[in-house]
Length: 125
Ligand SMILES: [Zn+2]
Image (cartoon, rainbow, N blue to C red; front, top):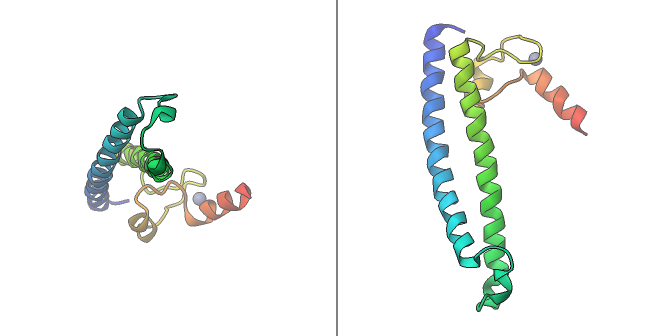
């Protein structure tokens, strides 16, 4: 990949990283807040708003899920940034061919070319 292209991806990734980090911080706050309300294990039983508990719990679960998905994405973005520094960004980690700018733009943290990605997904099932 040319240096000008690498520079452009470096900017795109750091913007995306900042966006995800903000979203993650917001949701992590909600988790901490919910955690205090429940007071840890066993405290749920003493909750004085049992009627609302179902929806609270649902929100709590989705928040955790979101945080972990975003958390993993953040990690992947960090890895991508590392690969830009290493000069390996944009190459398939499996077959070493160029991933392609269009695919990278659509998925900044892509590690595999489309063929290898499809193969990996097929192997999972
Ligand atoms: Zn490949």
